[in-house]
Length: 83
Image (cartoon, rainbow, N blue to C red; front, side, top):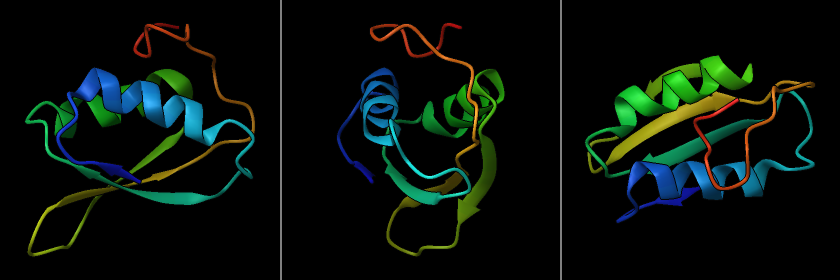
């Protein structure tokens, strides 16, 4: 999933929408450009119950891996960091 040019909050809202119905255990690589992403992605995973797997080696961009859980804690649609 690409988050190039997105603020972190927008990235999280898009991620929340795109993972709806995703098979549990699916690993997704997120390309991110917001300086807050290295902090916000693990925090979002912690709050929702998904697994933050960390940065993925890539010489050209910042990429992070997430694994989706079977029963995540829901967030409000327009406030992705809330539970």
